[in-house]
Length: 152
Image 1 (cartoon, one colour):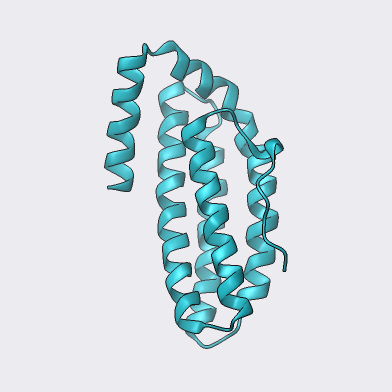
Image 2 (image 1 turned 30 degrees about the vertical axis):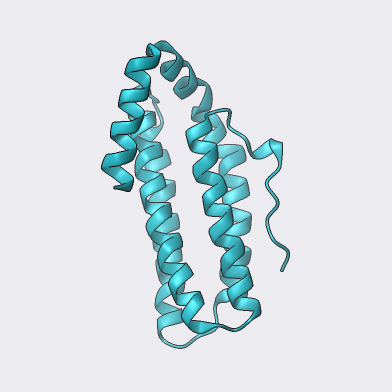
């Protein structure tokens, strides 16, 4: 399986979100490497990190949408919940001894790219406008507080 290459068409124009998406891509690529080496311990470790980080990212992204008054935040949250459940099913299968790496990587790659380009793209303009509407001190304060609360 080929690594995901970050391309400009995946940029949302919201740096904090783009940085998080890039981090998720790094985890997916690490999972690909671990799977290629059939390193079950590393696969397990990367899976845990990927799931934890992605959950934090979703929470952060949803808080940005809520702050901006995005009208479809409930639907977007539902998309996130369904994805988390789907990945959780893969993790369970992995824990039962099944080799799910290739199948999971296909799912992750297709889902992430599609989600960024369609679902995330829908909220970007509203969130970006909202962030720009905050003066820089207030924006930095809100962003850093939110990041600290969610990512620790």
